[in-house]
Image 1: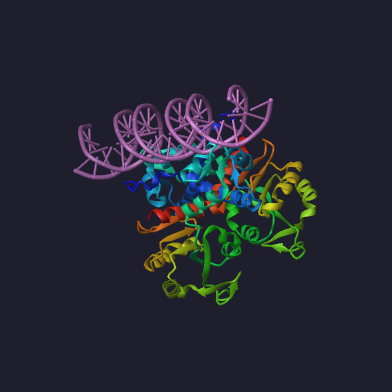
Image 2: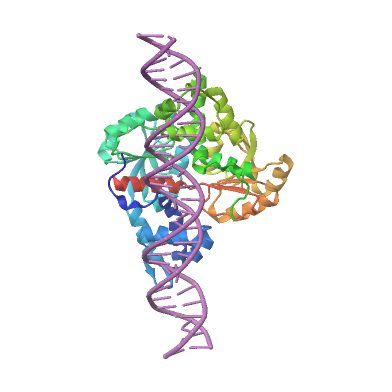
Amino acid sequence: MRSNLAKNSISKQTIRRLPQYLRVFYDLHAYGRSLVSSTDLAAETGLLPIVIKKDLQAVGAPTKLRAGFKVAGTIEAIEDFLGWDNLNKAFLVGAGHLGSALLGFSGFQNHGLEIVAAFDTNPEMVGQEIHGVHVYHTAQLKSVIRSKKLKIAVLTVPDSVVQGITDTLVECGVKAIWNFASVKLSVPEDVAVQQEDIAAGLAELCAKLKSN
Amino acid sequence: MRSNLAKNSISKQTIRRLPQYLRVFYDLHAYGRSLVSSTDLAAETGLLPIVIKKDLQAVGAPTKLRAGFKVAGTIEAIEDFLGWDNLNKAFLVGAGHLGSALLGFSGFQNHGLEIVAAFDTNPEMVGQEIHGVHVYHTAQLKSVIRSKKLKIAVLTVPDSVVQGITDTLVECGVKAIWNFASVKLSVPEDVAVQQEDIAAGLAELCAKLKSN
DNA sequence: TCATTATAGATATAAAAATATCCACACATC
DNA sequence: GATGTGTGGATATTTTTATATCTATAATGA
């Protein structure tokens, strides 16, 4: 029951490394470098040259023979692959600690994401601006999503309410959900969900610590 | 050049799923369930029964034949594996947006982590308490770490300063670093580093969105 | 008592990802 | 001009991870 779209078979791990490459290439570009080899990139990132070669090859990064990858062209290739060449409008539900932190993370501008609205149920929040983003009451979700035609949601709400909110979002035509709650979401097949679990990284760290 | 400690060969992916299992098992325990089958867990988590079986088997979770996994015993097994049965004292450097959000995340108490100090250079922050945690000036890093004998660091500082701070930490005997900055850290072999990259998840979401 | 059934356990297979090896090329150096 | 060298490209291999299949077991219920 897998996706029968070939989807060019670019691996999940490769995709997760792309932002890292992008940051390095931005730096190189700012420094005026026009070419960079996979061995140089390896020194910078801690990855193996072969991994880098294959990853960049996978997104069609342009090269110059015997000289490495073209910096400007590779940035374009990665941004194009991820759809980060244009800003996608998104909204955030749950303007608590984590939500506010995400709103304050200016880095999203470099990552194709522009958060244009936030929602919360806390009366003290509603009507405020957090880092320049207006906070609506969650009751207004439907009308705002529909009027602004938003398709991408960032969820930083408590576990207990996240499925209910998700159902509303799906109803409004939202097609991508970035979920920071620790609950698996039920959504139709055509809605993309990315589950974040902060504890997963901590577990990894603890396991490493133990084995040292 | 791989780790020649056999380290029981428990996979990284399995480790990353353990917190998810732990949450479900806490719930089951709270509801009074004493046994649960992998098929029930599959329905709850969205994972395949076979994955769950192998993961729990890997940490030595106790079972009852034909009836499933023992809830209380499995909690113990996972907590024991991750070292989450005791609270490990940790500290946080960089009490900005993300840092404050992490300090406010009470969930760490369930994840073996107790943040007992925070550090920042912002004079407005220093001396304050954020969610009950005292904020010291970063200049006091060495003395506080040494007097409290802290071994685990959470870094939510800007990319530009993270390596410098890391060097100080290593000098003070810190053995585990959870790094939220987007920079690969250079540390001695005996220091465990877990790199978090928020953009990796976003990249995954964007790729999924594209292929739908 | 006996067949049925749902379970973890064990083993086997498949898929994904990482890594190694070799090659043709164009630049630098002499 | 010749030659050595570092590059991405292509291919092959190994390792890791996910998934499928089969088995013995013990509770259940007729």
